[in-house]
Image (cartoon, rainbow, N blue to C red; front, side, top):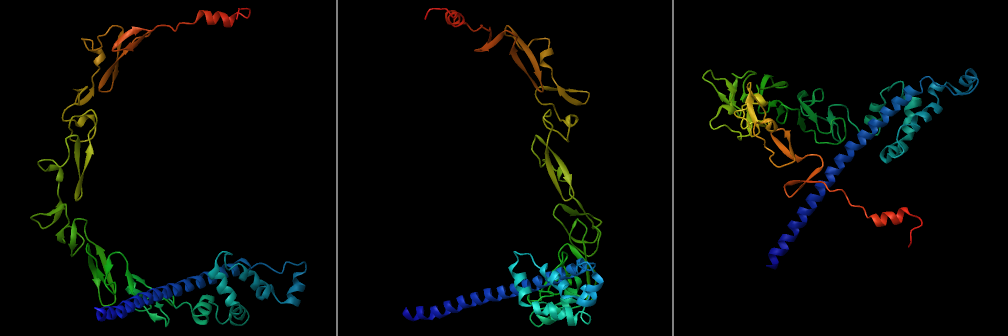
Length: 359
């Protein structure tokens, strides 16, 4: 038993170490991607600052003298400082740290490299501090993405780590495409054109699960809710025509492409074939059929009164009626009895109203 345990412990330790290393590698790749995104944002902000300061000068009274004595503002250190100060938000630690760490590179590019290397992102992020890669490449050595750097993933997906020093170069295919090279079509799509470096996947007809073309006659297999005809075309199944019908008694069936839905009947109906009071199979209680539609029955206008208690009156409602007491009467135990005025305490009233009353 001790031998087994002693053999297991190194294996468990090895597993733990493997997991830790995988996490560290994942974090490292994420950090490499993040560093490139930060650098890209810095260079974009630099270009914005360059445009923002394009028409400025030293701000003094004698600009001509300043340009002669202090060099032109256009290429001055003062302009560079103004641009660099606006590269990062104060809360962005990663951005500010990168700018502070490589501040001398901005000076070198500004005074010595700008003319020969006008693309700051390429010179600074890709070639100098090497946190980014050229478009279409990835990883520490800027390897070409799957499909080549000109058309990563053959134009049908995104290369993991594209343009950064991170990632693994694998393709995340656009909708409709699948496979390592994003050249294959997913289910529900067919290949309209394809060779070793190009693929165009087009969506099948809505009736097809798989297909070879764009029409409902090109289906290899029909989707659920569709069926194949004698002409080998997939057509919609009308679930509403089934016997028994798929919906409840107080609902009507609405057929849709490949499916159906159940909708509530109008409240005036007892069963229906569609929406509205004119689609009732029969009328609900309190309604009657008139001119092809179900209308409210006015119980209060019937020859035989429905409110039979003394001092009652009838009020018609949709699908029913109410019996209420007339004015001066109130309901008590199902009867309408005369409302009794509240009795006043005459002695209390007199004592209150007479300031000379005896206490």
